[in-house]
Length: 384
Image (cartoon, rainbow, N blue to C red; front, top):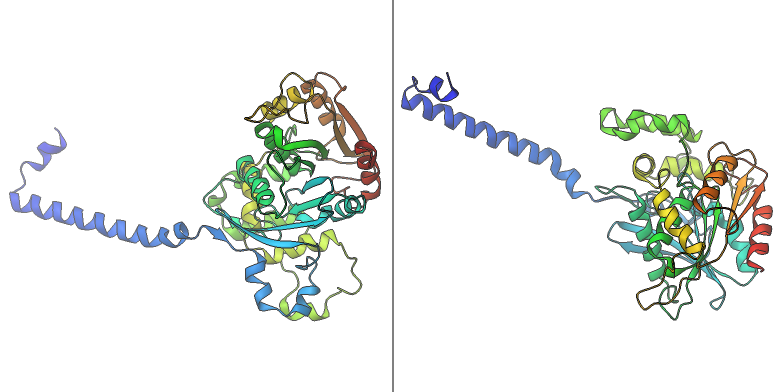
C-alpha cells in the first residue's frame, strides 16, 4: 500500500485540514529557523580590540597594554572585504622593501626586533596582523586558508602610499615565520613576479604532523562542543590563563617593569581581548597552510631552480628565478623540526644548491630571544 492509498479513505475535509496544518507547521519552522540564523548570517566579522577595547580605556591605559596600539611605528587600519586589518610601515622610502609575516599564535610585534634591525640598514619594512590576531578583525563565514592570507599581503601592499607592486615598484622581499612561511610559499607560487627574495623562519607549510594538542577532532568540528570548552583547549595550547587583566587592573599592571616586547604577555593580551582570536586560531588549524602544501612549494622550487620563469603577464622575469632561499631553524624546535623540514625541502628542491640552512639557539619562538643571530644571518644572506 502506498502513501497515497493510505490517504484515500480520508474524507476531503480531513485531507484539507491535514494539508493546512502541514503548511502552517512548515511556515512556523521556517520563521523560527530564520530568526535563529539571521543574527549570525549578518555578522560578517568579529571586531578586533581596536574597536572593542581601545574605545573603553584612556590613552594612558592603552600605553600600558602588552600590545599597545603604538608599539610599532607607522600604524594604519585598512578596510578590506574581510574586515579591518592593522598594518605598520616605516623606514627609508627608497630602501629595500621587506614584508614580515608572523605565525598563528602571535601578532605582528614578535617580528619587531628583526624589522628594526632592517630599518637600521636602510630598508623599508611592513608588518601586518593576520586576520583574527592583534588589531585585525576576524572574518566569519570564510575559511582561514592560504587564499585569505594571500589577499592580506595584497591588501597591505596596495594600502601603502609607496609602490610595492607593479613594474615600477621593484617588488619586495618576504621574511616569514611559522604559519607565515606556508602563506609566503603559497603567495610566491601565485605571484612569483612580485617577490624578490624569501627568508623562512621555522616554516610551516610542509610540516609532517601538528602537535598532538592541535589534532583534537573539536578543531575540525567546533560546533560539537560549547565555545567555552574550545576556549579552554586553546588556552592550554598557548599556556595562557583563562582570565587575564581586567580594565580596572590595567592602571596597576606591571607595564613599567615589563620589557618593551613581552611576547607571553602579548599572547595573553590577545587571548583576553580579541573576541575572534579563538575562532581564527581554530579555523587556521583546520584550513590554514600548515601541512600538505607540497604542490605550491614545488612550483616555487622550480622557479628557484631556473626550471620555470615565474614571469608576470608582460613577460618580466621573477627575481626568484635561479636564486637562493635562506631557511633558519631553532635547534630545539619541536614543531618545525630542522631535520624533517630541511630533508623534505632538499627533496623538493632536488638538492641544496638553491637553499641555505642556518640553525640558531631556541625553540619554535626563537625569532625574539635569538633575534641577534637571526639578523646576522639575514644581513649576510642579503649582503646588507
